[in-house]
Structure formats: structure tokens, C-alpha cells
Amino acid sequence: MSPFIEKIIPLILAFFIGLLAKRLKMLDKKDAPVMLRLVLAITLPALTILSIYKAELTLNMAFIPVSAMLIVFIIYFISYHVGKLLKLPQGTFGSFLVGTMIMNTAFVLPFFWAAYENEGLVRASLFDIGNSLLIFTFIYYNAIKYGDNAKTDKIDWSKFLKLPPLWGMIIAFVIKGLGVTIPNAGLNFLSLVGQPTTPLIMIALGLYFEPKLKNIGYASLAIFIRMGVGLAIGWGLATLFGLQGISRTVVIVSAAAPCGFNTLIFANLENMDREFAATIVSISLLIALFFIPLLIYLCG
Image 1 (cartoon, rainbow, N blue to C red):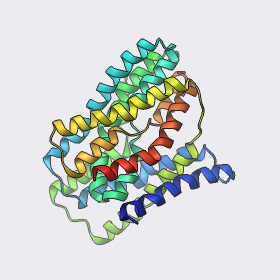
Image 2: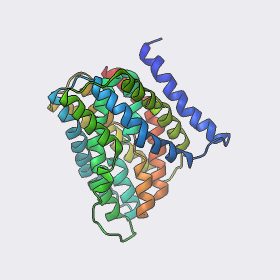
Image 3: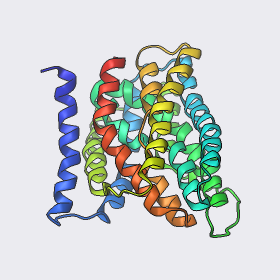
Image 4: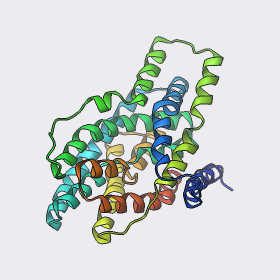
């Protein structure tokens, strides 16, 4: 069996453990946010610091977060016009637009770690910074605009600035830039704290998985834009910027990531179409479970 497949199978099994735990009522969907908060606040920052410290950084890696932001803007342009042509109700249009723009980088991160370890995680984290910046600014603004809660359209920048992985990355770059040596005890501590990241993410995704079928035709189109058109855009940008190796793979594969869970959060917060949001998130997640490993294998 291929070493890559040997690394991917445990990830898929961890996802199904989450499904089974929910089925047996050992855990439920409410436990998933707790797991992901633990990842976001503690395990991922530790793993990010460790990965950047050990990785070899290059200037062209700056194109990775730039690519993430360009993908969001290009998808917005496409989805906005497609949604208007379909004459979707405002709430459904909002979920359609937001769902196609948000890339579930939390889903693809464990696969990059399995395939490339530190080098993959560093690049995936850089892509996530560009993605997260627009999730909590431009994309959330559109959720407010097309929801019906009549809230202020003011952007809350603090949500982005408070992201622990962002500060983990800043700390790591400062350590790297100053040439500070982390002692072995520190490296072992970061490794210990960071190790649960991958299983926690996959189990939480399994708990979150809740397939619902609403407007399946429109949902299929939204998923095609997010994953199919996104893939084409990622390939085009990676080629335009001359990205090679792992950086190229990260941009192409991340561009084809499934719809992010913030689609559901924003749909609830701003009273968009919740069932349509749940449909595109769950179906795209199931497709990505097999599609993303295949893409990494083909790109590698």
C-alpha cells in the first residue's frame, strides 16, 4: 500500500469515529464546537509555531495568502451573478453566495499534515490567514447584507485579530527572524500540545456531519462553484504566480476545499437560509473526504 494512502486512511477513520460516536450518543453535535475551539485556541497555534520553526521559508510563499484572497473575490464575482440569474430568494441567495466563498481550510489541513508534515502545515496556515481575513470581513459583510436581521454593516476586525493561530504564526516568524533557538524541552512541549490537532478536527467534522437535502439542484451548483470552479481558479493562480512543489499543491487543493462551517454560523447569525447552508456544507464535506486526498495524490 502507498505510504500516502496509509497516512490518509486514519484521517478518514477518525471522521467516521465522530459519526459513530454521535450515532451511539457518546458525543453529539454540541461537542464539536468545543473540540474546534480547543484546536483553534491551543493545539493549532502550538503546531503552527513548531512547523514554522522547523520549515524552510521562501519569499514566494507570500503568494499563498494572496492567492486565497483572490480566490474569494473571483468566486464572489461568479456566484453573485449566477445567484442573480437564478433569482434566488434573498436568504437562499445569501447562503449560496457565502457558502461558495468560504473555503473549509480546517478540513484540508490534516491531509496536508499527513502528506507533507511541517512544510505542508506552514503553507496551509498561510493560506488560512488569507482565507480567514476575508471570512471575518468581506464575507461576513455579505452575510449581513443578504440576511434579514437588519444589523449594522460595520465590520468587526477584532474577530480576525483575536485568532490564536494568527498570533502563533507571528510569534513563530519573530522567533525565526531573530534566530532564537528553542530548547529541546520546548520543542517536545509544542509537539505534545500540537499532536491532537488532526484527530480532533476530523472527529469534530464527523460530529458536525448532518446531511439535509434542500434545493438539491441549486446546492449542487453551489458545490460545483466552490470545489470545481475553485479548483480551476487555484490552478490558474498557482500557474500565474509560478508556484512550485508543495506551495503549488496547497493553493490548488485548498481552492477546491468544501464549503466552510462558518456558512452555518453566518446563516444562523444573520437569518439566511439555514437548511440550504446545511445541505451544501454536508454534501461538499462528504465529497471532499475522498476528492481532497485524490487531488493531493495527483498534485504530488
